[in-house]
Image (tube, rainbow, N blue to C red; front, side, top):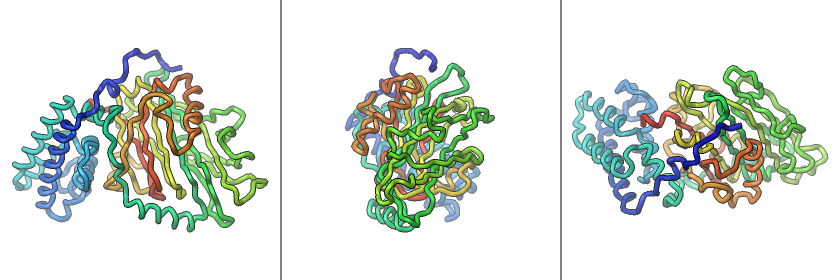
Length: 412
């Protein structure tokens, strides 16, 4: 059972969206900031013009350099860049370190002060400004993704190569407080709709970053929501007869191997949905004070719906950010090493309106009913949660989309 919470709405929903005039002022400050830092980067040795090179050259923390380099590399300047760039203090630290190498940083430092002044005027702090940018009613910005034709071609080629493809990949997580301050309840639904396979297709597997052992030392224990299905399958949202699922638990992940029922026609697409529930450590008690939520695209899919729903008690002290990574074998590396795999651009993270209206999507009309399975299991209402969504057409095959839940936002 979740702890009782005050009736006030989270800060996210008390923050008004930016007006057109405010957006224009913020865009102007961000544009100046990008221009000055691009100029500074151009004055450095070639070996220092990447995130890793800059980190080594200036002896600075790598994630700060990664955020800066990826931010100033964006082709278009949009207000969401505020969440991608380091804060004013981090920007000053980089500029001062470059000045110590003999570069003239006068213009760059002036642009930082102008940007910091705009942030302070619009919201008081970077974290509060991010809430205004993500507030319901904020103007929608186009997703920044690789060229749509290129991702479509990759999908078609991967489908031919693997012998498999799906119409929709769903991954949604619901986080709810518990009676223990050092634990949160984490439920998840995930699965595939319209999955097609050839006779010679490679095996179909789904990876879940958790263990099904409730005694795991990290407190992570995922168990099926439906007691009658030890494989976690939701029969009411899956093809009948349901696919055959076998699960293994190597390390800190559950690997689900999925096979079509032998009585099902080979040419018919299948649907399979899973629902798991458990507990994990509250991110605020971890050294890194954050939780990484992943959606891995391990088979080609036409569309991905990747959601995170935070109970308002958790959302009040958390900032959610999205990035996109090349998938490689060592995904258990520390989050400080993520700069090695991060793509320079990623689709935007949408903050959803409250309730079932915000959950609804044109990707699948039964999606709100699917999420209701978790909300009801948590004995909660959708209105009690703040939702964040990554909705991508032709997500890049063999990559991972990460929603990072930062519970240390007070320092940003």
